[in-house]
Length: 562
Image (cartoon, rainbow, N blue to C red; front, side, top):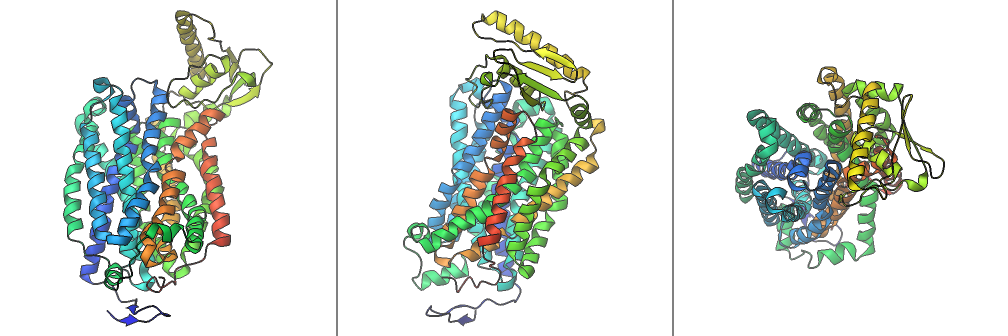
C-alpha cells in the first residue's frame, strides 16, 4: 500500500478510491455477519419481554411484571457504556480482532444460558436475579462490539466510501432484530401458542449456540485492521486510551458533542421506529403478537436497504445533513404518525376514543405516581385505583380536578362510575369492591365501543406496514451514516474507546431506557401518546446542538487524524 507523510507524523497509508479487494470484502462481511448474530442474541429478550415477564416475574401483577421485565431489558443497556470502556480500551491497546472474539463468546453463552434457566415457579427469586445478571453480561459484551465493528470496517474502507461500507454494519442491528422475529415466528407456528408460552420460547435462545459456533469460526478467520497493525508496528498505540480520550479536554469535548449532538437523537429515533413501535402495537393497540411481528418484519425488509442508500448518500453530501434531517422529521411527525397507526391497526379503539372520551375526575392530592415496577405498592386511594384499572385496560384518559375529599369518578362517554377507597377496609371487602368496580368499568367501556383487543379483520395491514416503513426510513437516516461520522471524529490511537462511549451512552441509556420511560409517562398522564414526548424532546435537542456545533466529517483522512 502506498504511503504519505502528514505534518510531522510518520508515513501513513494513502487512502484512495480503488474498490476493496476480495479479501477485504470477505473480512468486512465476516465482521458484519458476526454482528448480526450478536444483535440476534440481544433482541431475543426484547421481543419476548411479555412471555419472560410471566416466566420470571410471575409473583407480580401482569402490568408490573411487564414493566419490570422492561427494566431487566434496560439493565443490559445500562451497563453498555461500561462495556464500551472495558473493551474499547482493549481494542485500542491489543487490537480489534481479539476483542471481537471475547465479546461474541460472552454474548453467545449468556443468551444460551437464558434458554436453560429455570423460571420463577421453579427456583423463586433466584430466577429473575440470574436473568438480570445474564442481561448485564450481554450488555457488557455488546458495549464492546459495535465500536470495534465500526472502526474495523472504516479502517478497511476506501477514503470516499466509508459511509457506504460502514452502513453495512448499520444494517446488522435491524437484520438481527429481523432474524430474531423470524425464528420466534417459526417456532411459534411449529409448536403452537400454548406450548410456545410454556416452553417453546426457550428454543430461540438455545439454538443461538449454533450461531455462536459459526460466529467464532468467522471471527477467527478475520485479519487485524491495517491501520492498527501499522500503528502497532510503529509503537504508536495508546498506553492509556481512557485518560487520553476523557482526560484531555480537546477529546472530551468531542465525546460530549458526539453524545448530545449525534447519538442521543439517533438512539431515540432508532428505538422509537423499531422497538417502541412494536410495543405500541401490542400493548397500547392490542394487536396480537404474531401479526405485529409480521408487520414489523415487512417494514424491516422494505426499509433495511436504505441504511446503505443513506450511507452512500452521506459520502456525497455529508453525514450531518442526513442525520439532522432524520431527527427533525421524527420530532415533527411522531404524534400524527402514531395517531395514524392507531386508526390503521385498531380503528375500533380510535373511533371509541373520538366518540366517547374517558375522563378521570379526582382530588389531585389523592393521585400518586402510577409507575410501580416492583409491584410492592398497594394503591388504596380512589384516584389511584381508578387510574390503575384504566391503565390495566390500556385505555387513554384525561385528568380533571375534582373537589377535595370527593371520590374519583371515571366518565366514559355519558356514563359515570364512582371509584372507591380501599383504606381501612378488610381484605375481603376490598376484593369484592374491586371486582364490582372492574366489572362496571369493563361494561361501560364495552358499551362505549372500546375493544378488548384489536379485531384482526379490521387491521389495515397495508397502512400499518406503510407507517412502520416510514418510521424505519427515519431510523435509516439517523443510523446509516452515524458509524462513519463517529469514526471520523476521533484519532486512530483512541478511536475505539472514544467513539464507543458516546455511542453506548446514547443508545444504551437514552435509547435503551425509552420503552420503560415512555410507558412510565403514559401510566402517569393517562394518554397513550404522551410517551412520545421523550423521543421528540431528545431528537429535538440533538437537532439543535448537532446543527450548531457538530462539524461535517466526510472528507476527514482518518489516517491523518492521529
